[in-house]
Amino acid sequence: MTELALLPEQGTSGALPGAGADWLDGLRDSGARRFSGLGLPTRRVEDWKYTDLRSLKAETLVPAQAGTGDVMVPELDLGGPVHRAVFVNGRFSAAHSDLSGLPEGVTALPLGEAMAKSPQLLESYLGRVASLDRKHFVALNTAWMHDGFVLSIAESTAVENTIELVFVGHPGDHRAAWHPRNLIVLNPGAAATVVERHIGQGGYLANTVTEVILGADSHLNHYKLQDESAQAFHVATTEVRVSGGATYENFSLSGGSSVARNQIAVELQAAGAVCKLNGAYLGRDSQQLDTTTLIDHAAPDCTSTEIYKGVLDDRSKGVFQGKIVVRKDAQRTLGHQSNKALLLSDRAEIDAKPELEIYADDVQCGHGATAGELDDNALFYLRARGIPLEDARGLLIDAFVEGAIEEISHQKVRDTFRAVAAGWRYGGAS
Image (cartoon, rainbow, N blue to C red; front, side, top):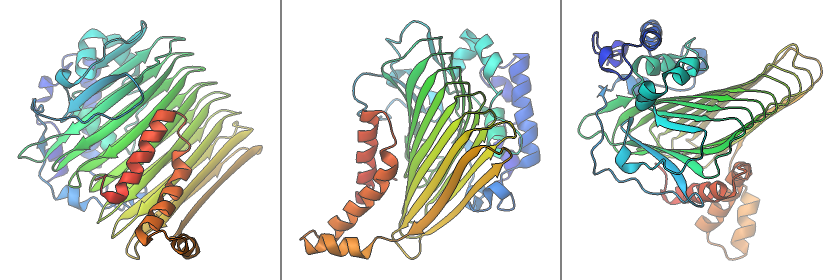
């Protein structure tokens, strides 16, 4: 497959939703031109030096078609009623979705519908946060964006129930590619919890881009569960702008796909902005699970924390690239980053690249990356008390992952993600 084969054929972009709007046509064209120049990343690209995409390049992918009505979407216990939007092969499925009961002041629409009903909202924000600069998959997504989710919450409005976005891969007989584009805008004082879930069957490329804009004193809990097919390729880019006094909390639990990359970039734009990036990646067989983060402290008196835990078995490979930038005027910055990996096999691999780039004087920043095996002394202690070996190993693995899971502030989501992580040991993920 050539990279250009991934782009819309000449003349077909007019069939995409919203075609004919000058600003949107221009945005798509800019994405196509940028991807034509960049192509798919190779390991010669610094940000991609640890993740091998040769298996993706060997695939022949066709544009995704709308999913069939017989797709089953298993429910996830999120502790009460949820507002759910389901996308099958990147296309909104009204039959599986229920967005009723949202409070006044909330706009929640599939992207294709928002292009017709809320064009001013999209023109104001879409493409303003997710940069095309050296972003291969953002450029490809921008050229192809067909559907996705748009959420806008009015000032001082809180959405009490969780909003769940479910992305289901069901490509049928052909390996396919889809490119969902999500936009989340919280105006000053707004609050919400959004849970993304990525599941599927068969081989495909899911290339998702999410843009998040948080107004002053707003609060977004943004959680993600990636449990796609072992034949799938998953690339997710989340780019966030956080205003003064606002909080962005993100947790990603990744256990599916052949190759998965979760890349998050957050800019803290004004005093009092808070960012919490946490997650766990659980690999087996020959999976590649890549977490790449950037937190940009662009203003003084901002706080960021990152805690990631990885468990890698068989020939799986984990990648953690985390960078904290503190700009010259971002005094009194607090920034902490930690990545710890547990290797269950002598063939498993972790590549960690923590970075600090500091241009201010009055800061408290630190980072750390460690890798190790299960503690033989702890195993012996548990075995001596009559606990079978596999159960003892499981207890130690669960305790290790808990160091990240406990950072989820939403209790029910925390409990559910904990159960999913524990189930991975029995083949519950990927």
